[in-house]
Image (tube, rainbow, N blue to C red; front, side):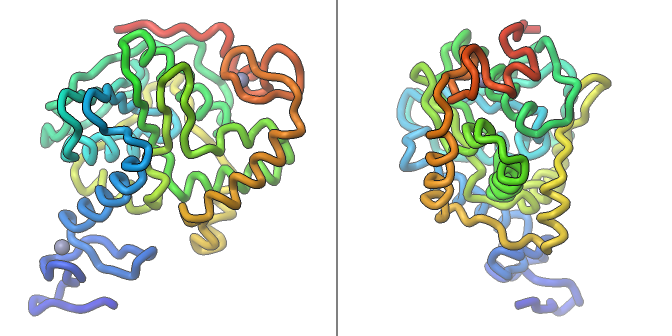
Length: 288
Ligand SMILES: [Zn+2]
Ligand SMILES: [Zn+2]
């Protein structure tokens, strides 16, 4: 319910201070602080059963091509979360992305700058997501990190599910898993309990921004348009992951090979279609 404060501005449904965001998911008006706390709760609630922030965890937050801004928001949330004793968190940013942090919110992080080749020419969201996962995993292995937090929200999972279904390509379901453990590294969609709009607003309200210099891939997806036409509904709740897993298992069960780069089930021997399209077998990363 929206309420107006004495001075005529909307007030936060939780603490009564000036509201800056209307959260459709809960119907609350929120101030920046309470929005941050809600998002933090969403991230923590998702990561807890995975024990991602346990003592000794080495956590990498890649600033992704898929959504650099949501990645920054996630990094800021992680920076304020209590982690296990002896754990560390760092940021990795591709050389073709530039970040703006006028308040110095992320200055506590160790930051790695990475050169990545080849970069895809396509705007296929699955290709860009795959590339983000592959470069992050490669870097994590090199620098001995064992947890990777990807900025994929519930809205992204919904859009990608729609996209995979519309395209009828079973291989695409491989990247619709909320988490995977690959060679001992946990890679997870840390924002799966959060909606895209909320994290984007929160990041912008904190002055964090990222932009792409020329050549940096940007996902172009038609399913977001469909999703927004439907007025953000029906968005998959994180709790529907069991239904999603059923579809996923049935799609992936039809595939009899395994990709030599990403390890996902594939239609043909050698590589999956996505890895082929981005020449993932040629992928190299360089610490800049
Ligand atoms: Zn508040
Ligand atoms: Zn692959």
